[in-house]
Image 1: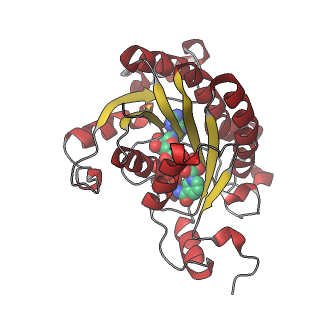
Image 2: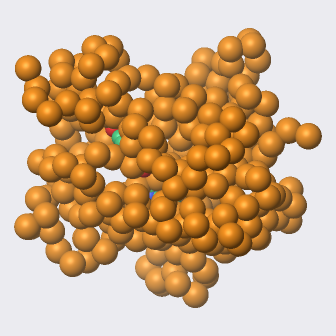
Amino acid sequence: RGKRAFIAGVADDNGYGWAIAKALAAAGAEILVGTWVPALNIFETSLRRGKFDESRLLPNGSLMEIVKVYPLDAVYDAPEDVPEDVKSNKRYAGASNWTVTEVAESVKKDFGSIDILVHSLANGPEVTKPLLETSRKGYLAAISASSYSFVSLLKHFLPIMNPGGASISLTYIASERTIPGYGGGMSSAKAALESDTRVLAFEAARKAKIRVNTISAGPLGSRAAKAIGFIEKMIDYSYANAPLQKELLADEVGNVAAFLVSPLASAVTGSMVYVDNGLNTMGLAL
Ligand code: NAD
C-alpha cells in the first residue's frame, strides 16, 4: 500500500511544505496537511477555487490531491493550554480540534496511521529584532513555535506512525553561523531543533523504529521568509557566493525530503542534510 504523510505547515503554494507535499505525492504518497488556524480559511478557499491548480501539477501530468486539511496550531498541545483570548478570537472560534493532541487523534480516527511526519513551520514574533533586543516572551515564543512544536508533533504522532516510517523538519544555518537579521531567538530555535533531531532520532528509533532527520535549507522567498525582511538579499548573496550559482528551487528541497523519508535512506537518522547549493561550505565570499 502507498505511504501516508502528514505535513504540518502548509498554507500556500510558495513554501517548503508545499514542495515537500508535491515531491511525496509524486512518489505516490497520500497527502494530509496541517494548516495554521489563522491561515486556514484563505488556504481552503484558494484550494477550492483552483488558485493552486497550476502548482498542483505533478510530473506525470496529474494534480496533487490533498486528501484532508486539518486546522493546527502547534504552540498548543491540548485544549486546556489555549488562553481565553485565543479561544474567543474570531479566526480560531470558527475551527475546532486544532491543538496537537486533537489533530493526532483526528488523524487516527480518520485514517488509523501515518508513515511520514513533516514539520515545515516556524514563527518568531520578534524575528526582526537583534538577539540583544529580544524579550524573554519573544524568545520563548520562537522556541515554542519553531522547536517544541516538533517535539510535540512527534510525541503525539509517534503512536500512530507505522514502524519504518520517518519524520523530517527544516532548519537554517543561522543556528551555526551568525546571520545578522535572523533575530528574535530564531537562531536559537533552530539550534534547539537541530540538537533535538539527534536526541529524538535515538528515542524515536528505540521506541517506534522511526527515523528523524532535518534539512538545512538555503534561502527561499516564502511567506514566512518575507516577514523577516531581507530574504531577497540572502537569495542574491547565495546566488553570488554558493558553489552552484543557480536559483534554489523549493522542489529541490522537496526532493531531498522525499529521499530522506523513503526506504532509500533507511540507515540515515539524526542527520542534518544541507540543501543550499553548497553555500554552507564556503569560508570566504569572493
Ligand atoms: P512558509 O510560510 O511556507 O511556512 C511556514 C508555515 O508555518 C506557514 O504555513 C505558517 O502558517 C505556519 N505556522 C506558523 N506558526 C504556526 C503554528 N503555531 N502552528 C502551525 N503552523 C504555523 O515558509 P517556509 O520558509 O517554507 O518555512 C517552512 C520551514 O522552512 C520553516 O521551518 C523555516 O524556518 C524553514 N526554512 C526556511 C528557509 C527560507 O529561506 N524560506 C530557509 C531555511 C529553513
